[in-house]
Amino acid sequence: MSDKSKKIGSYDKEFVWHPFTQMKDYEEKEPIVIESAEGSYLIDSEGKKYIDGVSSLWVNVHGHKVPEIDEAIQEQVKQISHSTLLGITNPPAAELAKELIDICPPGLKKVFYSGDGASAVEVAIKMAFQYWQNKGKSEKKKFLCLDNGYHGDTLGAVSVGGIDIFHKTFAPLLFETFRAPSYYCYRCPLNKTYPSCNIACADELGKILEENNEEIAAVIFEPYVQAAGGMIVSPEGYLKKVRDYCDKYDVLMILDEVATGFGRTGKMFACEHEDVTPDMLVLGKGLTGGYLPLSATITTQKIYDEFLGNYDEYKTFFHGHSYAGNPLSCAASRGNLKAFENNNTLEKLQYKIDYLEKELKEFEGLEHVGNVRNKGFMVGIELVQDKENKTPYKSNLKMGSKVADKALEDEVLLRPLGDVVVLMPPLGIEMDDLKKLVHATYKSIKEVTEDS
Ligand SMILES: *Cc1c(COP(=O)(O)O)cnc(C)c1O
Image 1: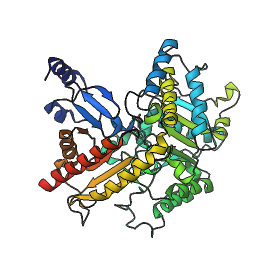
Image 2: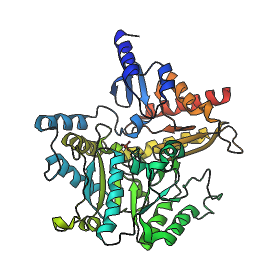
Image 3: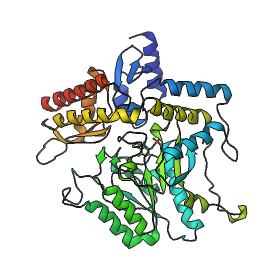
Image 4: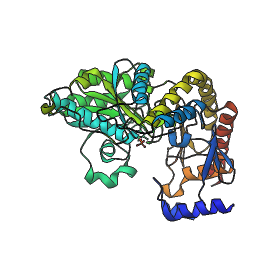
């Protein structure tokens, strides 16, 4: 190992506290130091190349070093890198807002910028809450969310989250919510089977709305894929059913597309699969193609109008982040959209998804693969001790991370969610690299699970 790598490694271990990482385990390993990248490959300080199998934690879209995004940022730096959006504007923020509205589902009209996904969720929660206050229906102040949901790590976002191991510790700090079951077909919380269930989990949500809609401001969930919850994929029709219930009971629908947005499920936004327009659409992660922090809460004219009034009516939305609408981030995001156009990213993706789905069928034959699920380029492979009874592995076996460690030997970088092995390659990945990624993952799962 070079002296430089050693130095970085020692600084890192001495001074950096890593997110979502048990530092005791981390301290025992040599850190991987990513120094550069090329397309779908990450390159470490020793020159070793890895396939970026989870898009740098779900943010990367076209690969790394995308000419359109590189150029957009370089051009913007020559103009200005930051100015506030409080009461004034800048060209990339305004132009991006227009471009986002052009590609968003019809009916969405106003873009509120923040820095990351969690902040954009906070915005949606506060906006929905205040909408009803401003409208004079101040009893509508609760939220309905889903088990296994994930919306980020700030306290509001955690309040509407449903992943016990992340969220339980903080329970005393959170506000109360209504909970609907997860659309988790493999382990159906209602013990039913799709399609004979007629999507009963959506009807459970409907029942909660029927009984409590007077108190409920909004429903918030991830359309089609509960990502951090384990790449849980909803059945076709769930989304439309929930939209209908929200309309029927006059409750706002917030769709968190921080993970599913920007082509990840095969369409630009997951809600397009069922032609559903939410009252608020939350975007982040892929918004800048995986370059810079930026998020957005996009809403309708109807909601926006409810915040208009004389200053002393205090209908203003008193919320904002210092770097909201940052010109560099917005320029990167415009470059991202340009790359979608220039490369026909979504058209080309379909072939890759077909290939991926064909290959994923093979995984089902593995002895310890209980369930393989995907929507487009979001894949979850759930490992189980015993396939027949769907018995999970004991968590101290860390089967998911063992598979990831194994894949590293084949120069593939993965990050599992517990015992769900996740594949989420950049949309721009070349076919050869996609094949390599899938084959290395298959081999790693087979070796790790059939060895023990
Ligand atoms: C990652 C994620 C978030 C949080 O985004 P951050 O930028 O990490 O704060 C919110 N919602 C969903 C669905 C996510 O996957």
